[in-house]
Image 1: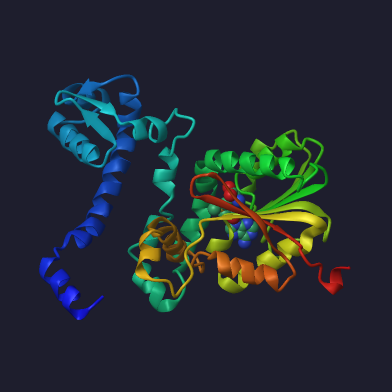
Image 2: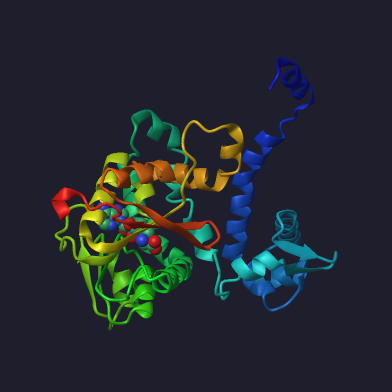
Length: 350
Ligand SMILES: C[S@@+](CC[C@H](N)C(=O)[O-])C[C@H]1O[C@@H](n2cnc3c(N)ncnc32)[C@H](O)[C@@H]1O
């Protein structure tokens, strides 16, 4: 940009970008309150006036309900003819608790532990979150994995179909899921390949979520750190690293990729699902179009040693181990999954 055009921009600029950031906080809590009050669930039964809604939801003064509804309308989450309120198309699909694609629990849990945000400056100064913040994240994991299970199940189904139809996997052998969470990935891969066996690893207090979902299936669940637990080497047809790398420090994330590749049989496939942030050193536009991925990366930093992961970094970690991405699939928007194979088998594996 020339100095002159920067001067013009300065003369014309207003504080809107700053207000947008400040107001993001209030908009988040308005949505949270609407969910807590049961507003979207109530409107799923049909349009209603502010007074009817206030009555049904136990709001003391209908004027407060109306104010909340007006803000949600401004955000595209409600609509009105001036008298009655109804859900927007987006809310019907993603904010009504009974909808198959509901994000209600994600709204609550996606920002991670709330205590991490006011402490962010202290976390960045020290280089690590306070113990209290890490403990809050560990305590949150069971609810977080339950909240993401529906989306991850849809992604896993899409990946399973791709693996089978492309001939990358014959549906046999062992599937290993490192950080298996709700068990949604193992569940959907086993549905596509009923003769496969499965092994899931997660922290002991999170394992009951997967145990419930996978009851009656041929699955072994192991509690512990996925970098430390004993696992059978070089025998897996599929290894899964779904939404775990971005929350790990770079050395641990690289070690985890190495471990996952070591678990693979020679013709196996490593699946890496994540919200990839753009690499460092890109121009402003690149970051402006990646606000979602960058926000999730900073969300990691607020409560872990992770800073998110870029695709070139993942490629570099794989390349030094003789592996590379053979395809990228995005079965659900913003859910990118790398299918990684051992393109060159290093000498010590042959
Ligand atoms: C964001 S969740 C992703 C869960 C699952 N892979 C999915 O995509 O639905 C991250 C998972 O990693 C697990 N996790 C975190 N640190 C771990 C560790 N050191 N060892 C094993 N699992 C861990 C968490 O308990 C949680 O289930």
